[in-house]
Image: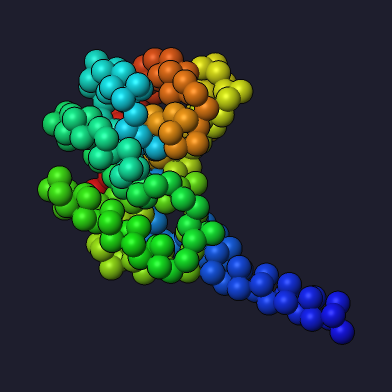
Length: 233
């Protein structure tokens, strides 16, 4: 009897997890037609960064983007952004898009309705403080739950995922591996996901410096191949 009750409990828990987390996460990643995963414009790519801003790294990336006259989307963690308001203001002033990447970089699949509501409500408040009307949102790890899409729509946000990831946050990553993975995976209309936040949001120490070195090869080569860098609309 005890084993039967445990099995029933386990099955019930698995069902709840599937309904709350697994099915919504897979749906939004693969099939939700309103989630951006491509630029939708021939001959273009979109460059995006997650997990910042980080005072050690983000400014260096901004310097290089300015040198190359490339605009990008920075999906910012509000916890880090409030400590680096000058960087946020610089992003806006230089024509980049500041997006929202959660308040404190938690996995939505493991979080409740209450957390999800608070996270997106606070994100909306934070972004509107900067006069940002259209809020682009990327959930950490691209993971969502049953309530995520409801609150994304409630607060007038647009969810943006990606189709190119180069694992640039990993400790074992090198500038060469980031460059190689990016260039092997990128194609017409790709949304490229890189990271300007280091260990503050779960990446390896110093990882964005390797990303920057890789970008010094990626951006010129994509330009040579005829791609234009665009922002979401």
